[in-house]
Image (cartoon, rainbow, N blue to C red):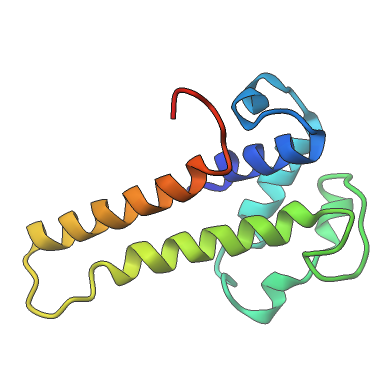
Amino acid sequence: MAVAPIVSILWAGIQNVPAHEASAITSEDRTKLIHYIARFHCGYEWGYPSSAKIHPAIKLQYNLEYNDGYSMHHMHPIIGASVFLLLTMNSCLSSATYEKGATDTEKLKAVKKVAELIRGAFQSIDDAPVN
């Protein structure tokens, strides 16, 4: 799942450091946020209205600040942004395999093409010279 790299890039932006340096920043709160997002926003309720709300578990299990609000709340804008990016990626990759009559090879080629487009979009966010 792409939760960890997406959260790391967004976390770096909030911390005002280049995205390619995000992996060098060790943060217990970032790790907790990754676990929380993966468990409560990318699980079986994926895409349902309840996945847009911040769950009390963020405070109870992960000891992060909590507000009974939506995932784009100012305390944790990374939650909403991550869910949006993950849903967008999933939708793009899934739609690449829907062409009727396409062979497995053609579907794989289409998925790779879409993956390259997504990679290009992320390169505009992450300014690492190695991307």
